[in-house]
Image (tube, rainbow over all chains, first blue to last red):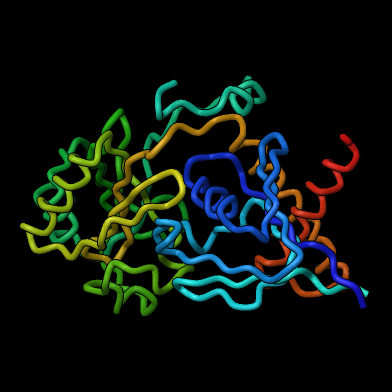
Length: 88
Length: 216
């Protein structure tokens, strides 16, 4: 059983900019530009906080609408934890 | 670009275009309350009424059809069927909180546009001063809205745009729905049931990842 890096595709629009900014400040995350999207990658589980991102719930619950290759471990009103997807 | 413009890419594909909303329409079983709510509480001018014998089939009741001006040439219209009984499905709607607790019923709603946050505040203040329960302002991705219910319990929204949509939004919309339609097709063909949005996010990421690898 191996795991591959989790990847978040963040659409480059203002309402999701705080997610990209938060990832840039996290040493475990790699952040690269890919046209319409910014791709956040990590080899280890990571978490984001809604208040720290400055998001209202209506946006928070669509946080991964750009695309998420990973496992959502928990998705609460204020914290989301994601991990690399387990693959065989 | 004005906030109300739609992305050029989307517009270009629609040589034959619609030109906005003429009216939205719904039935009402509360004539006086509906008139007083839309005309007096909301302050929308009553601009047209049709009163007619039932159309066509013998089961079609006589009715009133009336229209309130909701701006930019649009109206909200009601049918009041004479002698009708409030359907059971609607009987307990009035007076409920302005929360989308019944997503099937409440998804069918009208959202009116205002230009500024001040106007949105002013509408909330006006409605509350007239005894209407209004939701907190809810910021979505590209709009900010307030919600309330009319005397029938219908969900109504007033919204302002937070930013103009751009071509990037249209491309992302296509990517999301292509992934979702693919998953739905697979579910219909006997694959895993399509019940979790995580599947769409996963599929979208895989497809975007493939495109990226191909470009490199």
